[in-house]
Length: 474
Image 1 (cartoon, rainbow, N blue to C red):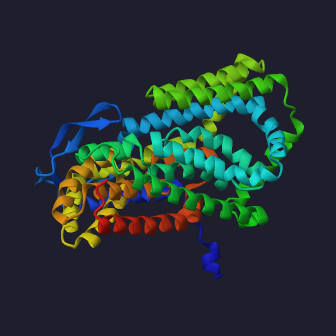
Image 2 (image 1 turned 90 degrees about the vertical axis):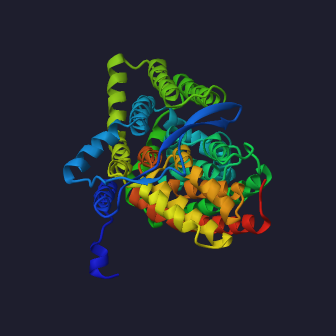
Image 3 (image 1 turned 60 degrees about the vertical axis):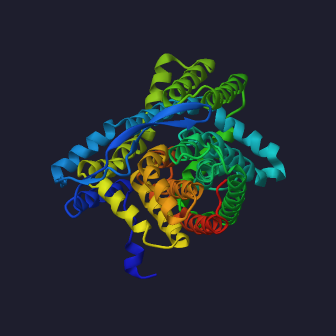
């Protein structure tokens, strides 16, 4: 390794995000302005109908662009912080951080780890596949995404206690849920909305999607298990070894010094019941961030009261927990500023129009891959699955008819393009939040999982080729 290479250090995540914001502002000076008209459409979501604002594919017209100068860039960051898609996540993770600050102070989780590891015995290798399969199923069925954030905080100490690293802990939960999200067969927020906009039967093509979900889930579990085994054999190979060593010692010492008292068992029971209520609420009652944040706040407060913490101690622990996750919360707000710049510059729709025109210049087998790449690139700017569906599917669905590609395949191209890169793009608020909760810097996570994302992309391209070859219509 050369001296220059040894001195090179990947910039901080916030530096990377801000660089992307500056790049987006520069692009607004180069790309002409354009705009689609937005219309409201009723879309089937499971058993109910939902009104979505989508683009009218025939309404594109050129408009003057608004190049974003440095002052506008700074304003965009504040606008990004205030937008509901960012502010919800920001306060969600702050409240979770505060609640877990109280739970951490009870030492209940740490005290339970030693007993759990002993109980697992030689079956500790089953933890990764079981946890990942469960979360993948959650992502594939009810679109589990933001709900994974608090689970990461529980998985990382367990992974460290088992001899793995914090990346393994994040991967068990977040990567598991996201591969299910990407290859979902019942996810109402991606498959449901995209199929509704494409005007095909909701959740049709279930058999093929179910097979793809199983293949991708098993493949991803195998990759994580291989990585975890390598790290357990030689911890120095971990990209977060320097960060994990003090955590590993802290978890080990706390687990050995703390006893699992009745009050701490009660805390574990509160956590288990609380998580159960959150999962039930998300699946059956349509709970989202507001309700889940309230439930985590209740978990934290009840945990503190059960171990007889004083009100001041509970408050101090809550503030400490918030402060430890504050950096991730700030980056969530910065991440959305890239899209704000492109929208305020009036060029987001221009990019959509130009690329959609490019798709139609190739035969079906190649066009579907161009569509796939386009959806993947769009996901960088619009990480929301339902938001991307509303933006792109009104154009891609009728375009697929002209190209000889079934609308079912067009939905699958959207699904893969929206899903595979979710775990790595720095503009995803949930990714930044999950990594922040696990104490894993984005740049180290990205370096680790990039080879897996490339493999996912290649497998997705092969699956799309097969769908075109057989004329898959579901």
